[in-house]
Image 1: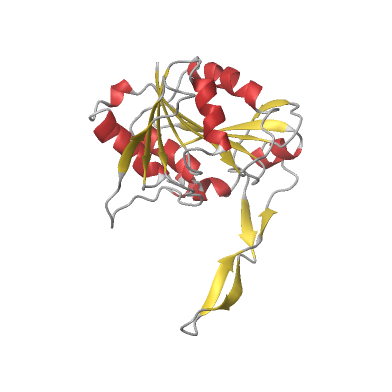
Image 2: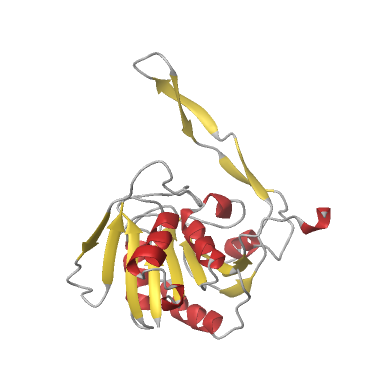
Length: 247
């Protein structure tokens, strides 16, 4: 099995190294990752600038083909499809993105570069799975989550995989109670922008702040409920943004 790995934290981050080592147990791994953090890039592509591509060697993982780019996670998948695998989409059996440091549950999924890469896979009918942990610390303890990743991956690969779909998987921090299938929770961010100072030219500087608001706190079938009750959430998702009830 040929497995493509990417992320939005950049090659060398704790999450992608751990994910690479797990996926090496399942097949031949090709990594194509950004050269630095690209969190919050969603499905962004580098439409206004050229992208660099460089092959690197990791002596601890010499069986892995590793490339880094100046692009986004979505760029990485597109480069893999059109350059590394020369447009032969059938050569990639699975795309795996992560492990992201920070939750991609609820509304966070639409901002996520981790999930953005998976949606490119879904666009091309390639199976794709995004893994994230509910903690932004780049050195967070992954030990509770890691034993679940291979079994979850194998279970999903053994299921019928509908056309144009990918999976968004989020894990709580700390001990895990189990795995729960979940829908995306309705939620939003509040008080998101705050002044951070004044630039040399006198313009005001602003930065992202804010806090997440769960719009359905009593629901028990959502990814947010799963995470806050110690469960890994598995959410099927799709790039189809049609709101069918309105048709």
